[in-house]
Image 1: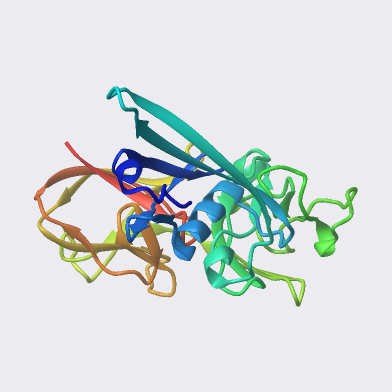
Image 2: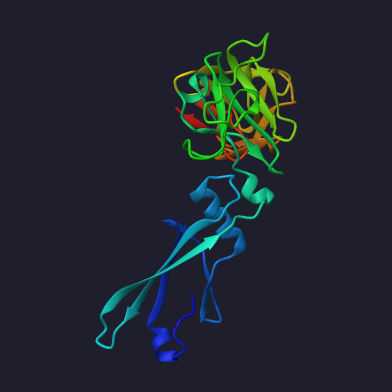
Length: 281
């Protein structure tokens, strides 16, 4: 969006915010003449607003809110809107938010748990599954591509189910769309480990899975200043680290700066969704 060329008008013309489909986007002024949004910020805003993996043309509503000061000193708001049709690029950045899983055990048939990808073919996530059936979906509703038994996308496709020998429980779920293959790794325990915990780096302190909130919980944990991580099955093949609001597989140690008793809740999900809360009592 270009600002007025007249220097006097330009001084009295202020860009207040820029939004995409209702979500705010960071912008910067270039030479005081042009309000610009970076490709990275636009990609992130589109990803969060669209939450889709379908590579098709989409309508992007870009709204620019400005203010102008009149000669009498009165400030008025001016709203400009640009509607553009764009086809999202197939990049790892956009692919980070991938397929949703929905089912009786996972989330009561709601598209809330997500599988993440970096290449648009291989997806990985974590969720509770049972033998009452589940499907994978590209959208937060039923309007996208939905995979059922045998990776069928037919509208009347049967539900997927756990393979023979697998029982109800929490799983790491991996999808290979090209090979039409699903791989499940049973997660029997998740715990905290690190020098901030009572057992140090020698052993995990187990957490308990809560079916109602779909979280792993540890109450009244005694922590000291130091580091900790979350890991599954008392091993390091599956572990979460990073910052509390953005945990990733193999992420950095989580810093505990204050000794005390904590209630810990882990949302053990895919990269881009996983996070935890550590509430000091």
